[in-house]
Image 1 (cartoon, rainbow, N blue to C red):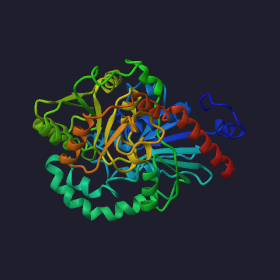
Image 2 (cartoon, rainbow, N blue to C red):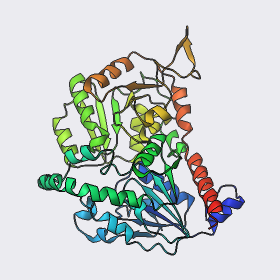
Image 3 (cartoon, one colour):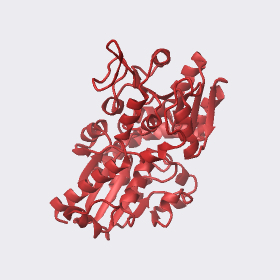
Image 4 (cartoon, helix red, strand yellow):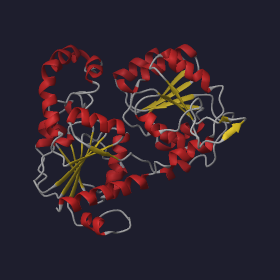
Length: 409
């Protein structure tokens, strides 16, 4: 049974199918989990498979059957996806998915490696090829979070990485089709897995962002703070934010849900102008977006919805100008889109600002420039509206319907 789209011959093909949705782990709540929640809305009768599950109180999973692997019962390993790294290949291969006609993995790690029957349509929605095996291996190796076990892991991983990469490559050959969350991810899928993919961008329920401010606040009405939101993990570059705002002494709020060792380290070295907020509600985060003078986005990311969330409440963004940011956002003040309105005398209002290098100097330069600029709040909002979840849902249904038709399952 699919959500309320217009019925067609191909969508009817989905309605009678037994569907499973597989994901790497279900613990925190981020972009991958948001995609999962939308897949569950599309397929409300689908079963869920995950290595571990710790979102029992989340209404998204109310009344849903969630099957977990043997890792769920192993203390310490079940709470750390890094610690369970060597166990997940076996965990996903052990799932019996023989009763399903369609299996969809939402993955940035090992869940694409499930084994299905020959006539099952297997699709992988890929957020990125496994970072700690491929694109960010060196960074993860240098930023292990195992405490006293760090030296052991740093010694062990180089000895295991070849076999882990071979398994990951072999696992990536199992899906019939790949969907990439961005063109950057599609290029990585081709590079590391030698697979073609179709791009379908993750999207948001834009209606959620009508609260608490139905109209944009001017820069004078906003709070005098910059904002960052996300998991406190190495590649999100919160360390760069702390170093930058320790130097410029401007007010920064960082909202996160990961009270890990890196969070404790960064909080301990943060100056008084940096405020950390932990485990905020969804409404509290949206309110912060609306009141911030600017959202700061420092990582090199495949696709991240948080800057789009900020734009939905008319908030400008300073972003590291690389990868997905370059394919999904409106050009900045210095290189504006022809579609943007004129401020006067040939000068256009700004919507977005990039910084060129992940350094304190480059980010501070962008912040200084930001504070001299004027912004077109309505253009910011209109750009973000193209990422509404209705677009994502329709594209997913059309993709699966087409592949079912062509595959003649």
